[in-house]
Length: 250
Image 1 (spheres, one colour):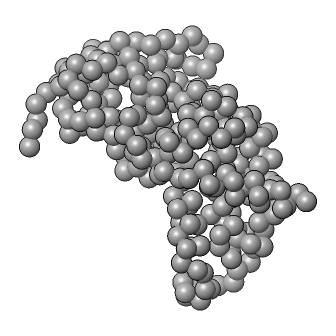
Image 2 (cartoon, rainbow, N blue to C red; image 1 turned 135 degrees about the vertical axis):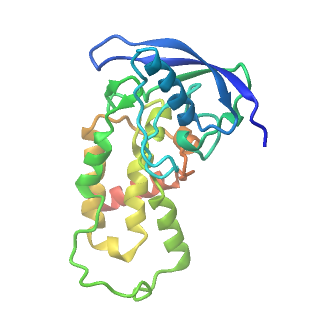
Image 3 (cartoon, helix red, strand yellow; image 1 turned 90 degrees about the vertical axis):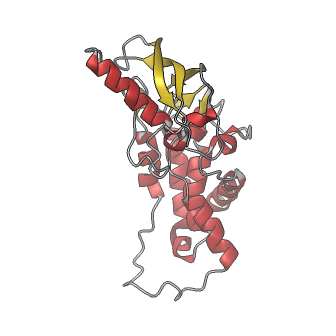
C-alpha cells in the first residue's frame, strides 16, 4: 500500500464570528497521504496549529461515516468536494494530486448563518422537520414488519428519500439557496408509506410553509441539488412535493 507523502496547499475561510470580517487564510500540509480523509487532513493541520499556539480551524463533524450530515463544507467550490455521492468525511486525498491548492469554505446561505470558520447554523432544517416531518397518529403497539402490505417499489422509493442526511449540500449548491430537495425528501418518504397518509395534507402544507419562513429561496429546477447530494436523491422528490402541496391546498 502506497504511503507516499503529499503536499497540499489549503486556502481556508477563517471568521471568528457572524459579525466579524472573514478571509481566506493560506496553510500548507507537507505530510498528507492519499489514504487520509479530508477531515483527517484538517485534523492533522489543526494539531500543527495548536502546537504553534495558533487557534485551530472550527469545522463540524460527528460520525465520519457519511451518515450524520455534519461535515458540511465547500471544497474547491463544490459541496462536499469533487467526488459524486460522497460526504466530505468520506472524501479521501486520493482525489487530489501532490501540490494541489484546495479552497475550503462554509455553506453560503442566508438561512444557514455562519457561527465560526466553517461552521454554520442549520437549525432551519430542524424547524422544517418540527413542522411536520414525523408521524404523530396513534398507530398502536408494535406489529410485525410485514403486517401492513407495502408494494416493493413504494417501499424502496420511500427508503431512497429517507436516506437524506440533512447536510445542506442542496442548499449550498443551489443558486437560489433552496431547501426544496431536503424538504421534498422528508415529505415524500412518508407520502409513499401508508403510515404517513393520515397526515399527508397537513404535513406538506406545514413543512413547505416553514421552509419559506426560514428564508430559503425558491426552486427553479437547476438540478445542482441532485448533482451534489451525497445520497444522490433525485429531484423527482421536488415534483412529488409540489403535487402533494397542490392537492392539499385545493
